[in-house]
Structures are given as C-alpha cells and as structure tokens.
Length: 69
Image (cartoon, rainbow, N blue to C red):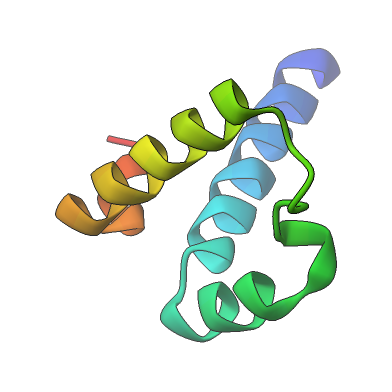
C-alpha cells in the first residue's frame, strides 16, 4: 500500500530531523539565534517555568530527552 510506505518514510524523516537537531553543534547554533531566546518582558510565571526547564535540562542532556527509543 502506498500510504503505508509514505507513513514509514515520513517517520524516518522525522527521526532523522530529530537526531540532527540535537547534535551539539546544532544546539550551540540554535541557542544563539534570537528566535530561540526568551524575551525579557515575559510574564513572571512563564519566566519561572522557563528557568525550571533550563535547570532540568542541565540535569539531563537534551539528546536523551528527544530519544526515539
């Protein structure tokens, strides 16, 4: 069935994109881009949540968080 083949191909592409996004070099580049940085005028609650997320990410490498296993 062609639909099944397309779905399998899409799943493989998504896995490859995820794998590529979490490489160390890509993480450094993405973190430096303004689009991936939070604005200073965020609500306090959202800022606290982002700080907690940053702290959690320091404990776990991002690569393991996006694991496709």
